[in-house]
Length: 176
Image 1 (spheres, helix red, strand yellow):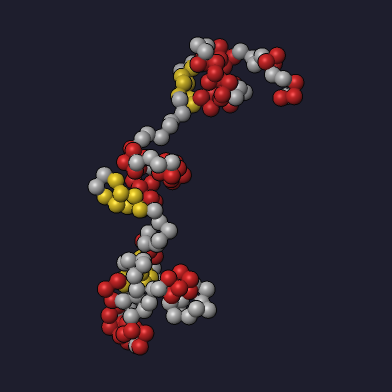
Image 2 (cartoon, helix red, strand yellow):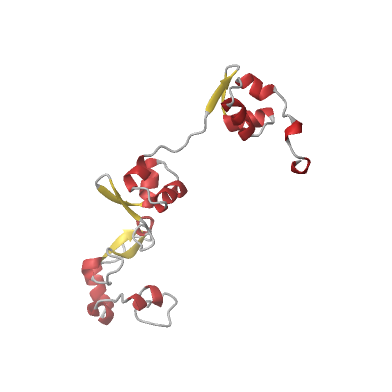
């Protein structure tokens, strides 16, 4: 009775926010069944179409639990490319990580730009007929990827960058 009882643990999110149950349903469970019917399956739950609206016939439906999580006030709705979806659906559609997309939007990037900017893909390098990422080549050679990247950006060949030992003189004693 989260809509009716101030002592219910969910009161603040329902009754405390002004969400009500229509009088007809409060008076009779049979009236609820007449309007809504029996729950279709154990995978269904009652859902408010407008999550800020009341529990009443015009705002309530049976929905799969897997879909119900999309209809909460906590979801971030993103409008882009002529459609409106929650962030989780955009993540599934674009393949962009949730954290990447959320970070882009929080930094003020326009939704269409945030959704269409390619995600950085690590540089692939081929050596002796084998292709690996910079990170994997670094692991292979026992060299930090930043060191390897620095060597390559200074014009070193991949062979030299992988094979030449790190010059210990460049490190301070305390850094070892």
